[in-house]
Amino acid sequence: MPNDESNKKHKTCSGKVYAAIILGCILLLAIPGGAKDKRNGPMNQTTIINGMPYANSSQNASLPVSVNISGKDVWTISPPSRMNLGDPRMLAVKDQTLFVFCQGGAYAVDIAAGKVLWGKAFISYADPFINDQYLRIVDANHFLAHIDLNGNSIERFRIPILVKMFRLFYMSLSDDRMFLFLNRYPARFDKPQPQGFILTNYARKNDDIEWYKEHDGELAAGFAVVPDTGDLFVATPKQVYKTTTSAKTDSALETLNITGARSLSMDYQGNLLIMRINDKDKNKKEVLLCAGADGKKKWDTPLSEFGQIVHPAACSSDNVVYCSPDKMLYCIKDGNILWQKDMRRLEEYGLMLTVFSDGSVIVAGINSVRHFSQKGDTLAEILAPFEVTCRPVADDKGNLFVAGMEGVRCYK
Image (cartoon, rainbow, N blue to C red; front, side, top):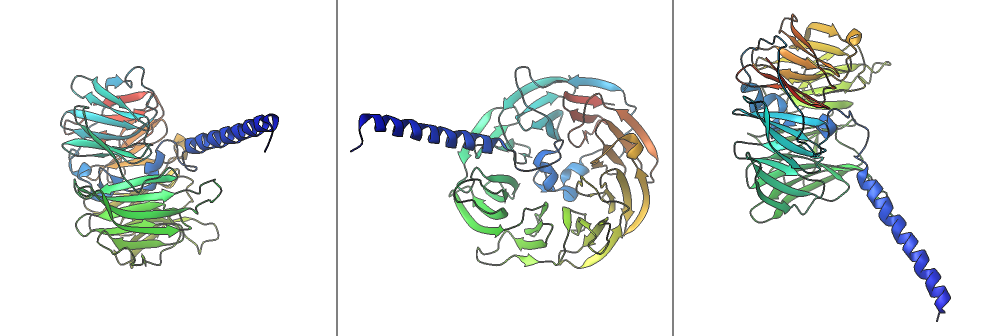
């Protein structure tokens, strides 16, 4: 039997080991999950906006047919005091309220009065969801919370599949069924898990996972869902995969034989829009590929450069496509480049796009916002007073909302 002295040494050593393990876990969980464009957070890796693929989103339909932006500053809102919410990652307009989603929480702004209505603090790395009744948030502890549009908590519950080393993006198919998409990053424990992605369907009524698919070795660069058919598409640099929300757990993912994908979105006809690297080009230039749901090419357009930051392509209702690899802006129709803008001299990169129903496009760079017609004419230019961190949105009154590190500004 060890003596008292050795017992003390053993306890001291064990205590130090446990403390080191706990500290390591804390530091590990603080790592946000890989290099990314800090202005867009994890939303840079998914095409889901308000629960639907970006191009098919009702958000575009809710925008005015045309906006005449003079650049007049109507109001500027700072986040609620004493709440460190971080940079805005997404904006949404419901009636006369602007909702601002940040990594550290969310707050609502009365558009007419230009004042904050309420604020909620939480840590979330997942995409938010909003409908006419509530906000849906998944926090860093992997609880799902419903908050009504007045900021009141409705419910909060844990989804059984979520664990610390996952980064969640998700698509809500209905109030009681949710499709979940997770990127799994390598764990730095004794038995590390390989990186990969997981697709699963969660039934709220019986708190059950209906089906579950796990794919090792690849992190997804883009993700899209077709709500009408339930088709799911996941793009990785190695391959583009297809399955459905009704697939059986043991069924294999279908491969579409598309490689080099860096982002994924969809047009209004249900075609895939994939920003990919041209493997046959020794300079590794970007290509915008349009493919059907079966993976067959409809057209592809070689672009003039390789983008360090690639946001998903955006589409107008008449299928004019805008894309922005790094410092270039392209307008493309049926595979033909209608016009392009070199944004280098404007010190822009990683351009974020908002397409209006008249086909015009708002382009947000690091410190400015520009409005171009579908013909490429410059309609407006606004120098933002802060670093822009997410896509601008507009309401049906012609107000444009730009969010950044210091708050939100409304322009008329």
